Image 1 (spheres, rainbow, N blue to C red):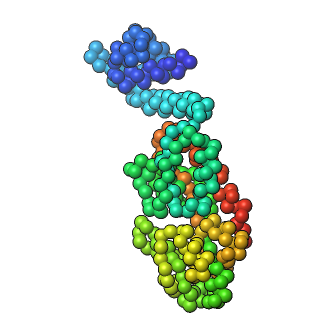
Image 2 (tube, rainbow, N blue to C red):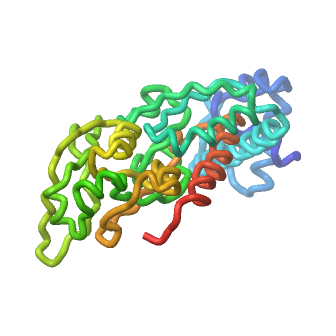
Image 3 (spheres, rainbow, N blue to C red):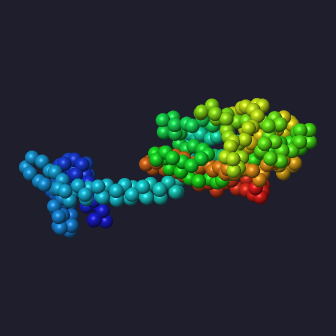
Amino acid sequence: MDSLNGFVVFVRVAETRSFVAAAQSLGVSASAVGKRVARLESRLGVRLFHRSTRSITLTAEGMVFLERSRRILTEIESVELELLQSNETPRGRLRISLPQVTALVMPALSEFMALYPEIELDLDFSDRMVDIIGEGFDVVMRGGTPSDSRLQAKFLGHFHHLLVASPGYLQRCGTPRHPDDLTRHTCLHYRFPSSGKLERWPLRREACERDYEIPVSMVCNHVETRVCFAMRDRGITCLPDFTVRQQLAKGELVTVLDDYLERRGSFYLLWPSGRQMPTRLRVFIDFMAERVFAEHQRYVPHSY
């Protein structure tokens, strides 16, 4: 403990450049501060400060020791705060940005609200690329591999894309056996809000290295709309597997061209790094990482 107090006194002197100012902030005498620094230098076998009648400056060794001391004290403070928070009831407001994939996240969010009633969820459903830090979000859920070094990430799980249509549509228009057959079908597409581009259907290229020609019969930026249109015999669409698990299980939709699909996606939770994580955020991240894909994995077959 005496060594730890030495770290605290040294850092305070280094920051104030004054034994008197350090003593005042610590509530002890200047002589006590001077003796503590002298004992620390004696134990380390180096001088930490250049002293004169007018100023106190760090030696080269003192600068190195200051950097390490700050790290040590910061880590101790973080551990103390974490232990204190572990005994607290999570409460407060969480501002969360989520993609428009309610079929995946709504069951878990509902369970979380029941388990943590003192946490206020402020939910923003959008597929645009939000500025997490600039817009003041505590955490966001997004697909793809994280690339922003300012953010920490927690992997949630993988998903696959499927091409689906209703049995009624396929009975009327025929079942495509090869991607080239799509030119004769009604195809329902998704447009990315951030870029305005159409989502590319993940059909594996063949030896000719060409993209397949896929008709554009309808475009929207909403998952549930395409699910609804497909169920009403309006055409073929490309969707994440978790959005249609119930419809597939009931036979309301069926998959096509499974052998030609290649792309697998992933979801992550992202939050600003370099901050002490409040209890409410920690329990949200842990809960979602455990639950968000659990129900999906129980229902969706992985034969594709």
